[in-house]
Image 1 (cartoon, rainbow, N blue to C red):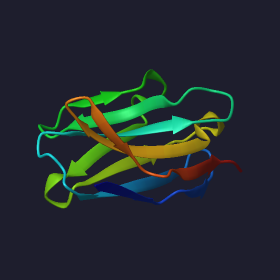
Image 2: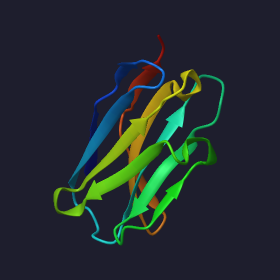
Image 3: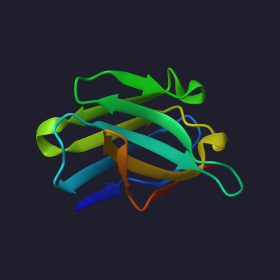
Length: 115
């Protein structure tokens, strides 16, 4: 079984910064992709960013140049550095880890961007 524990969500001002962390526990295949997705009520969950075990990154268009994903594979931990967030970045952010089509999800952490 795999469990993901997210932390770091909360209230941030527009133009500020916030860092999300997610640690994965359990039987985790070494060749995996870890990522962050987000969802607002009434909309589909969307990719924010993901990163492979080889370090290749992929970003959603709306966060390119503002958010940075990184990982510590030894700790099975993924981070999302959110710089210059905007009110439209307000959402529940979900962490994921996956391999060979199988994905596991965290419970989500709320990020609110507001002054």
